[in-house]
Length: 156
Image (cartoon, rainbow, N blue to C red):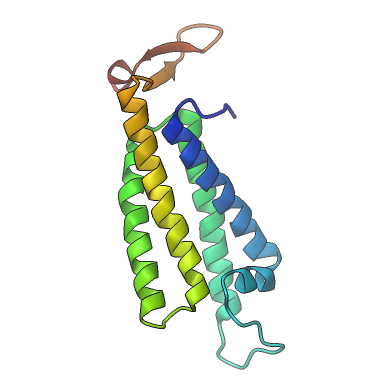
């Protein structure tokens, strides 16, 4: 995989890598993941407790999301970058409300903050890239597969 080619790409790559890593952590060591999020880890779970099932599903979703984000970076898919800004802000809002309404422990606000700050970082990266005219995409033109073109030409 190539390194990101833009500021916004770097923000997406960092988030994607961490989503992949934390998803794997939840699949391999679910108790560690629960502790990181501020949830209790009882010695024994009662009947009807589907915490493990839910953690497996959300960890797999995180792992997959990491792959999607890294694929977007590999292809410099800028519309995806813009899309993530809005939906990460929605995620920030939902997670913050969950903490404020006592649905989730206070430590879970760290997840909300990560989403909100990540959205703002990607938005800043998109702004910075546009401002400095660095929105360059790579399209295959020959054996070296690396001829830069403007973002407007790459979109066609």
